Length: 475
Image 1: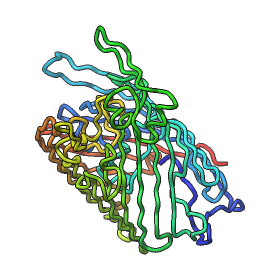
Image 2: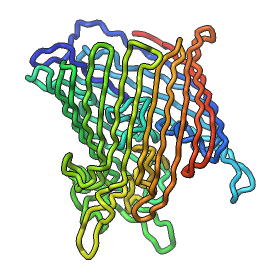
Image 3: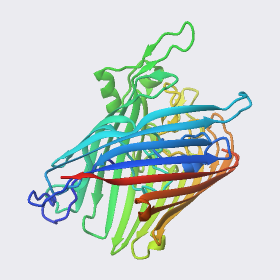
Image 4: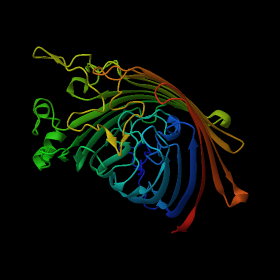
């Protein structure tokens, strides 16, 4: 996340590491990069473009130029801290010839990768702006992506208040930790069907164990697309208000029925989606082993752990990190299954079976759980292809100053219950980064990736990025 909270260090009755006598140094840095990408297929290979915060275009040829300044949160022992980031990027993308066009086209786009400010006041975090966020216990760079916010799409403008990272619960000596927060956001993209869609997200987490080598954590996240205005796309249609009042917000917040459509009045107002996670972590010396399970829900039939009708669906993961041998210091394996969806039947003969959950899809918001046309959650799921089984594995390490990650996945797609269409794809990626001190400290990153299968077709691509970071000032 774009914020850091208090880290518990002392095991007192309320072990908050606040000590205003500790000196703190704040630093403002600059960050800039230029990149170029090319591939042989109609789209960039899957692992090359996913979970990149929307910075890589799907088109087979593109280039980016980005500049920004960043101030990180550096004083966890002070009762207040702050950070901010401004990163402006420009992209040129080329769309190749198709059966319907005789010439290729080139488009240019300017956007903010991040534009945010964050402040921590004692234990409470306040964040405003465009800020990349990822939720879940999976690795930040060796994972297929979490089920709700994975870092796959462009960051959504938002306001968030809460406790971003785990802190000790008062009076329990650090053995019980909590976090939680509420977000109000704006899906201000070029949605084809609905204008001015709003985002609601809230989460709560509990972690047990404290200083013990084994900890157990549980998190519940609830998000919803709500409000906005349905566009008049055809003659005779009128613009429809989906409900944008305070009363509508409380319907969404409390997961209760409302709105104008029959579906919202029978179920819950808005497009609701969420996930819950159990994570078991073992830490000893230079080792960390974490096993985690994430469960996705679209309605109340699957919203409670142990009682959900779609308990067969979810993301199972294992991540191992160690600092003793740098050549391979991280390994991840993940398995994703979303073929159950609470069963093949939603209703029949007046009886509601609550099946066909159709993850990421909603009739009122046809583009579903997307932002600028890109899935906000796990990129292996698509709005019209949400029944999948996927395997993912990744390795990471450092070989004599060359940092690398090697990832591969295989996915079987079954479409939806309404439109069962089968496809499969295997994806591979190798990425290597190295800082060349003699070349003004530039960091060079080269990535090679390929797809094989019927989902995206066969393609091969490469990505070159040259980045420079440095200090503007210290104070």
